[in-house]
Image (cartoon, rainbow, N blue to C red; front, top):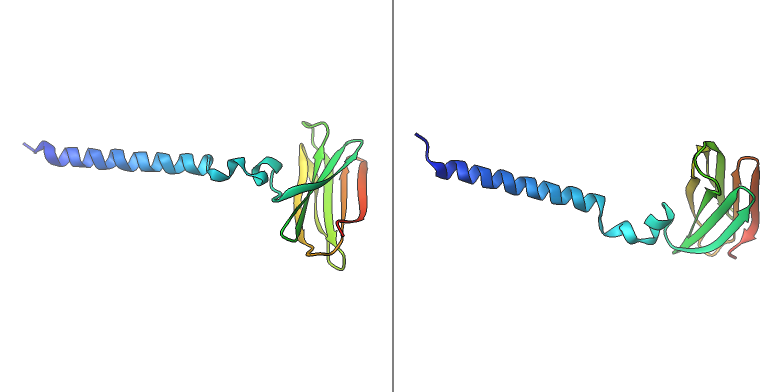
Length: 135
């Protein structure tokens, strides 16, 4: 006959391990960053400094610590459509995202420092180009 003490310890350890694992999964899913600006914007950190509207959507521009980030957001979501967004700092190469998406293209981020940036966005056949901004 086996003693109940050893089996009880094993059960407690398994239960503790399961509880720790469940807590870790919950923290990963609902971690402290869920209410951050980055989560609310879908990937762009910082504060929104510009919103460039056009017929089929808009391009939201964010800035944080010298970095500029942009996303093209469709006015009507659901069906896949061609979308693109790009950000270029003066004197640098643009960062682009282009594809067939249902909601948004991007985010794309460049380090601009104190340089001007040029932002472009397109959803379907319509789009917007900012010219040099944030100088």
